[in-house]
Image (cartoon, rainbow over all chains, first blue to last red; front, side):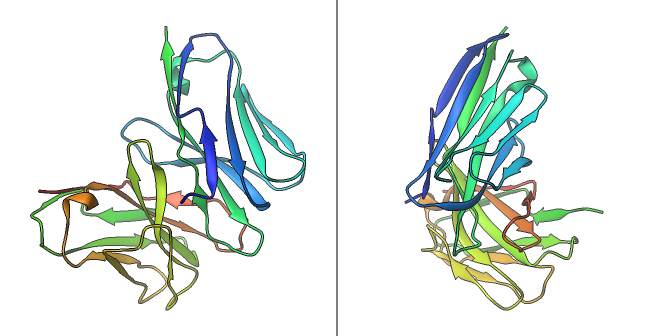
Length: 111
Length: 113
């Protein structure tokens, strides 16, 4: 099965509210990446986290990598309709370069 | 600079037919991937190629074969299509140092009837 688990599968958000999606791995990851896929589109890279405890921000998006490098989160503040889509995390084990994706969180926004 | 190009974009097959999905990248990347995307399942890795001439199985390789004959191209073959292979297929490539972003093609929507 997939080595990276992601929750929730669906997130219905009122415009202007905040939400968080979580990514968990049973094994230590060398790094974790986040991608966004718009409806009908293909995944597009957002960011990569490498260091234990790392936090990165992109405007209203905040990404965190856990201290044990086994989990990560994406927090979006003041959700906008442009945030609609599916957000994937993707991780690599320390001894394996293959990129494994989580199942994704599909976000819909109520105006 | 086209990035990752997949062909075809859409395909309908009858059960038992064979076909090859083509993927080419022009970014001089070492690593290439084939994923399938099904509702609620995310992106599942079918096959992976770390470099020209090498391939590795991913999570769901059964029913598929791949070929990496050169650095640019990574093809996915279905020898005898089954309805369970109805899916959206994505090819991706990355530099291959283990810490680079992946670039995806536009996807192939395959229906097996």
